[in-house]
Length: 428
Image (cartoon, rainbow, N blue to C red; front, side, top):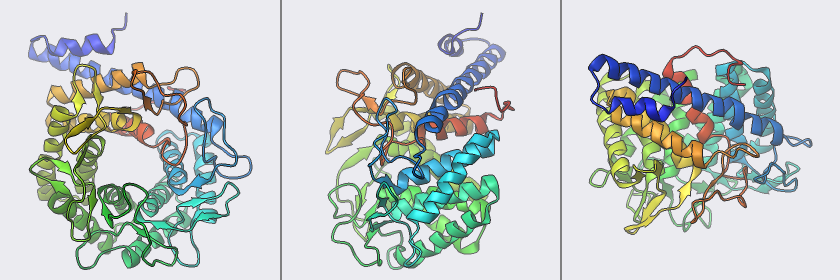
């Protein structure tokens, strides 16, 4: 009888002989990957295939927990770019024509309705019919546009997607890059003038944020893999340096979330999900550059980030990552996306070190997700748990922020990293 993932990994901790421990570890890791892939291809992606396409064009801006759309809801650029990225990568990895159809649909809609063809960049939001709803330009949103379009090119070879991604890179460098202090300014009006309020998050006074730089880093890492341009390489190296020198507080090993133009911290917030996410995205960026010396430096940073979040933010007994700490007070709500990011971060730390504690942490967090966040009735994951530790069912499965990105990316990462040759239809 096939043993559970819990029992298999328990064997590793019972002072087994070295060969037996290695075998148990291998089996536990294989079960983790198998279960995550089944959820990805049998639950997450099918939900979006079934419920997200809008017959009038593109994808619905809001989908309720039970899969019912809100047809008149505005459509966010971030959600659409994440859908574009998700199905492009799903097609590249699994070769399913349904994934390509949705990736192409997302690419067509994004370029037609979100790209500002007159002034450059991408809109933050459009109305349900594609007309302009919010003409603001957010660097965060444009980073995701680059990310989605670069992955579409990587998956399909569509030159239009690459050209648009490169154009958006040049647009960000022209308008958003701070030539004095480095980094990228948060927000602009449509004509690239200074807005009355900065950002999509926080109090609106921070011209720079951690989160925007995190996803510019991610987008540039991917773009460099399909377009290894010298100027892009320089900016990617600069982003890594900014994180290690300006955004990451190496005394606390937490990132500064909201910053001035000169990188002064504006709020005391420790965001555990973003910190574990940085650990593996920073390592990925250094890997992409192929610089062994830099990778060695970032390895130390990545492991410090994971260790601190495990010690301060991770509930070892139950296996979930807390949300954040604000002014020293723990905000202990349970959100869906930090769990997905922590699985990848723990798995990455295990790959780097082969220290079994990290694999055990990845497995324990996955078990928490499996038991508490997967919606077995309607599909996908719940957005979080309430104070009673029960799923929150009155929040949408899709909106500006809830998307198929964090949890599908977890599946993609474990699939690629495990180096297993899965058949395309094994998890359907």
